[in-house]
Length: 479
Image (cartoon, rainbow, N blue to C red):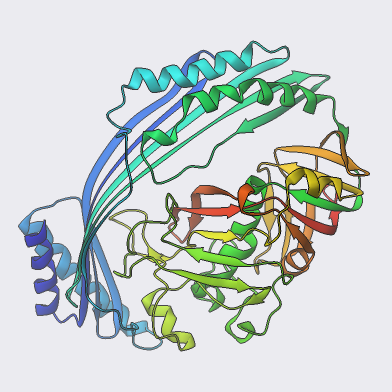
């Protein structure tokens, strides 16, 4: 592959490119889904291909192919330069990349147990055993399980002298129980954090240990009271917060969106460069740290598709908006001298674009348990897990649901609620945060299916958090 990579770069330069990079990628994905006592889906796919990206005449060109031969590489490199030449006729200004030193490195995510070496019967058997444990409970009429295993092997080279190799393995599992009765159906899901680790991340004992609780909470959800309307204090668990972080902070602080360069899928942002270092994004307790070196983080992949290594930096520090996710192209638009290393593509046939990093709400500085946080809340709602969500084009006005909800009265959980939604504005919401549990309760939940771009690409990243409280938030607006 290294010889073919060098050939691609040489052909691109000979054709008139001033910069070129190439990615050879092998991807394997195994997905298993179960429904009740049967396997509803099983796939095991592997593909190999390469993409060549160039700058010629001041414009980008990109081409890709699954034909990994000398002739195929030469053809694609020429095609990429021809596309750049055509694109140059409509460019606003020449593409410029901030500097990045060349490097030669190899990255591998830690794997104790190769997930693809584990017998398929063992994986299917685990999901079916969980379903069986759920279905033994009264009113549970539907049980589903899902297991995803991914491996991506990559060779990256560019004309600046970088030669980078990586092997990233991702494992994730979840299951759901659905209770039916009282002319209603309600579900409860358990999803431990997906991580870039081996099959050791799929802990069978832990998964089975939660089955009874999940089933009983699905049943309790059936008989729950309706969500009140008005304003309440919210205590949100790390899993629920992961999606709120993703939509209201992660996407809002992708620099290409903030510059108006990416508008698909609610693609603009209120967090424009004139607000950098001037916007109070959250309360002084709120710190958002991007960390593409986080052990097990879903965006911990060694380096991005600009050849920039993983880094750690603040997006929000003590409530102040101080940083973006960038690529080598957009970093220079606001005077940055280096990219934060967030330019990634989801496939060898996709052109890289700015993606959310591992982005986490940091834990509170003082010792605080979830029980203490709830006991200090007079009237509120405690929410676990993810549910429905909606956010406007500028990432300001949002509404989120969840997976399970409990009413808080005088510091105690007094019963489940249903149809709970909370609505707020991004900066109003994060400025209402007045308490965050400490490091002991920080959990690195993740997103495996983040969509962006047109045509859409799917990326993965981790959003860690500890339970946190938000004061005086509107609930029940969906009713």
